[in-house]
Image (cartoon, rainbow, N blue to C red; front, side, top):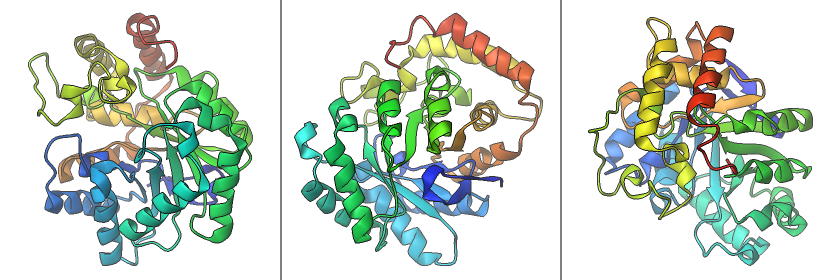
Length: 327
């Protein structure tokens, strides 16, 4: 699989990574054996970048990755985790003492003395412009607890602020065929600053897999059931903030663009990877087949200029005026 430099980390990672929120919680029940199988299938397919967070299943996702690493010490993996959602979301809680506590817990969960990449997990907007926050993260780098740090954001403005700070190695942002705003300013600014872009929610919570209909139902503990209005966390994390039925109409048009022999999900992932400035795309996978299929998106063809124009036309027709302007 093709690899690209992950921003200021100095590390090269697979252009298709693996998001592991679903291995912890909020996507229905989690089978630990299945979780290990997904990690193994991804690695076998050439995936070298795993993204997790300390709150995914209250650490279960990190622990699954830690156990997998311990069982496969020869694999060249880069693991990114996220911190900050374990306490009330007040800017004052983003301080060195809490960072040390959170990072130490993640180090134990992952079985790593020094974490490859730690990202602030969509904190309050004021945190991104607080120089003391970056000073604290620099301290953790100097102490050897982490190698690099970045941010995960909900808003383009938050990404642009973080990019201005020298120590920011990466920005993780929602980017998919239904969420194009990052292409306008965030990706160019990141490229100019040498900051890596980690594209999350690439399939719009599964909408862009092409597997759903208006009759599809989701488990009670699946965020695609309980967070459609943003009652639990930012609604942009669920179907990219688009109305489910409107999204289904857009997917039907998207499928008409997909080349023969390529799945809808693979085309959606490959289109993101083709955008200038994207370091890696991190789809999730609930089973081995999904993991292998997602990884194979790195090698699909037919994602050309005509395909790109079609994606942008669908976005303009369905979403440019309907998605909240902050996205």
